Picture 1 (cartoon, rainbow, N blue to C red):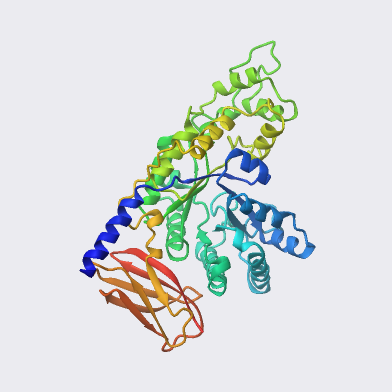
Picture 2 (cartoon, one colour):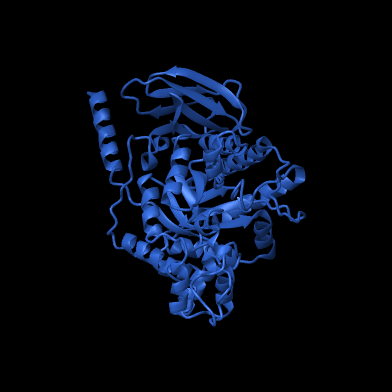
Length: 465
């Protein structure tokens, strides 16, 4: 009877998972809270370097912290990516803090989380390992991941000490780039790097993130399928756009001479990039702007259609990364939104702004039919990490993990210490509870994973007093 009830409950969970709420629609780059609210943004992603955190806390400045609190008040979720720039380097690579440097990083991060952690939904470990915030190529990926592990475990320990204020935070990997190269050349050195980030994400994070700057939707689908072939973890995208369409080798529209204007027009013989850059200092007529955009390789309805692709793959979030990133630091999401919301007819604005607004309005109005292709109870919001209980936790001598196992499936439990070392393995678990004895384990925070058939079914933390 008990098993029948459990099976029925699992079936109800599976059925309800098909009625998922749509993927969170957001922006990469956080403008003023009021502008984001006006746009109907559900989540905003932005970054904090360790130097910025240190400056905010030492200077007593409340502007950045107030913004976090305000976004939370407006019910706009937040994902904060952490970075550690090497300010002594002209290339501005990220560094791997060590010794006194790492101690200081954790000291300030600890205070930062204590002050505003309750307002943050997601923390992204690093920004973009192989892209904008890449590490020095001389750094070994194993050393980079050791640092990420230290950060992830530090945050987990903070959560264990303050479960009410910080327990809700989910950890996300750095945004994975380079997949198109891996698809073209499986022997590329980028492949083991991508795989390393995925393995790190499976072991230490809740979500694996990819950046989808693509030529077209087909390219985006190929990237998503590649990542999904490597992991069963939930996915997110903290940067997406059709930027590659204007900068790819086959087109490189951005640097070619425009075909929209002819002599004696001022823009005749100008490159597309030069026209776009000039439009910021001297906004051009909307008719002329639309003439220019009509020559671009931008796909009509791309924003809505590609969002639907991510949502159907059960993405946790999709943060739009600029209208087009035309290889210009000026032409970004923040600038564009500020322009559009302050001056109604200033260009460049469309069609990208309007497309985003249309999608946002559709979601807000409840007219979007969520189409998350959930195929098992291990996907997305039916995350098995929530299908267990631990008592007591913290504990002294022993604790018990209880979970659902109506079919007597065989599991293996692995226990890791704060250094990421595997300190215990319990195999051939077929019951619905696991008793973990302290024995020779030291006081501290531990992470456990419940495996079966090469898949992680549950993961969590234990605290030994």
